[in-house]
Image (cartoon, rainbow, N blue to C red; front, top):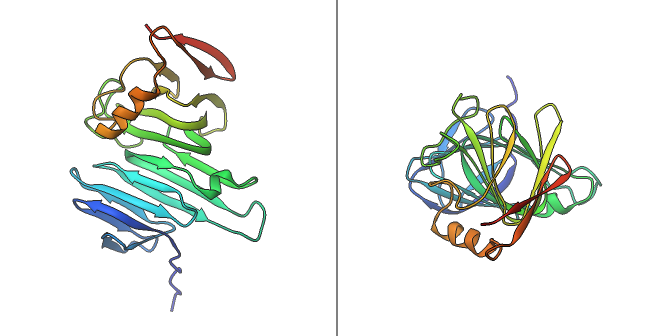
Length: 232
């Protein structure tokens, strides 16, 4: 008989509204519930009115938005071997807010957040990422590979560097910034309010509090060079 893969718990559900399910790496589907486990390799799916909150083994937090699919492709916290810890998350559809944990802060660890046209390298940060149906409106989720899909990013803390799947660095985003990635992988900084449907009410208020005073400036880091974006 073929031996079934071992499921390794890497986190648990801390809150759930609406219906969400997981498909593990053996293909078995289960409904998620508060307090229940999530495993390495799980594909997590939320319904159109569902919100799912997770706490991971490294103290990271994920808040998965409605109508989303996220895969915990690799998740390893190794306290004994340098460079053995890894977190690789794949955003397949929709979006989430992510607060990084010990893995992202540990030197030598592997941390990647992959969203199709762009891969995010993150060190000690909090961000929102969502695949939306257009560059101007996030009320409808989109999936990787769809022609109209656009990746929207908001930074609440720290910094992320962005790379195309082949490894070419595109730029960096820091605290308080909002940007959209085009279908061809071009990073497009935005001023003003993020697209409708991207942030919930609490996130919107936090974003507004992070914006510079009237007439201030933000340094946008594109391809390693600073571009000053003046707020009007």
